[in-house]
Image (cartoon, rainbow, N blue to C red):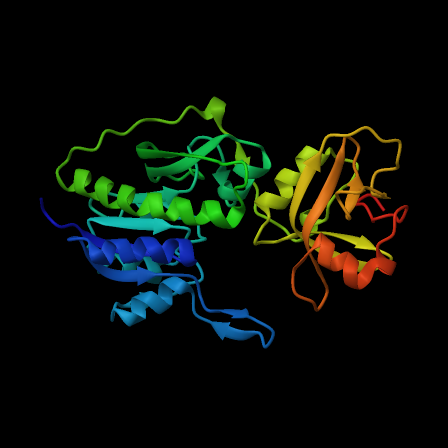
Length: 318
């Protein structure tokens, strides 16, 4: 089995795991492209991406163009004479001129079962939608957004307690061997591309902090899925008397009530039970501003006066 000459393009932790898998394989990574350093943390200091940090540890050339549309940037990529450009959560759309540079084209590791959940946030959108399974798709890239022919699929169940964070880790663990296996097939000319059915496509919009505010006029089940999907980012929240409460874990409770959505209910088993349009949401792990996350029971021990039955949480429509 011949070793392929690879250029890797990726940015976050999810991508760094795949870069490590390639470094551990018999294939040869000759250069890395990643997003420019971005301000991060309270001090807003420029911070290198996880992919850049890993690449530098291994002495690989690292390039960080803002885009890959300029002729100079494309010439930089061309000089490496790659067999394949491997793209994992890079954050840039590649123009056709770039897609055509490597001998065997460009492949992408996408964290969904395409054509479902094309786009930026497939992991979270699958949980939020209540999907029973997801997976990893390795695809041959074309000029569309996650529209290329599929080379490999790995299926994973979404468990009842799955969060965005736990699924993220399961997917990179599944994606790494799938990527290496796909490259092995490509080196032997054994890949069998499968076209996507565009009629089955759904789009995974990028996550925003604004949409993490809980809308109590939705059903408790929908909000419970949202809480799981948005843990650990961007983390769901609501506001009570002008104070923000982050919600890390919650449970949908099937019950009848006459309360206005957003009302804190009195319940013997659930100290933080909030009325929804359908059912109620028990907030089980929460966080006040400036405090550590704590259970609902611990919150009520220290802050009972702030959370009394009948109080009204804010809604998106206000």
